Length: 160
Image (cartoon, rainbow, N blue to C red; front, side, top):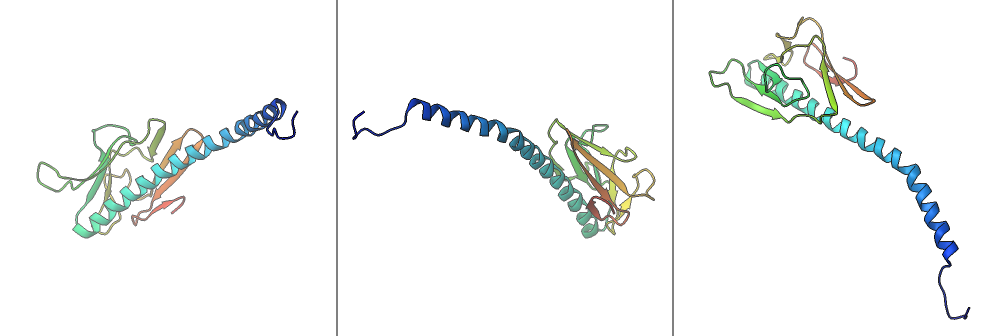
């Protein structure tokens, strides 16, 4: 080979491509898990913000604000609405939380049809017992997050 010609041999290129392929095969599952964790964190965070909005609205307006699935009897991972049930018909929708991804499941303890915040920001009926905190469990595959709504209305990720 002439001294002036420079480049890579076919063997060097094949070894490099093989190493890159092995590294990619190792990295892809970790990257996929990171994406799923990020989606879960985003959906839980959006739900927490929605709950906090409803609580703050109840305090500011001095009335009960209700969070309920937009379609009666629908699951909690569908579109949710924050409404003022005391308002005259048609009941105004204050804010809407879009439906979660179809892979996500949201389970509310006691299976209530709605969550109400009173004028002090605390939990009010129709929560099943109104004497216990509400626990909301978010599940996405193997990822689980628990949001607790304390009797005082405080919304925390984890315990009250």
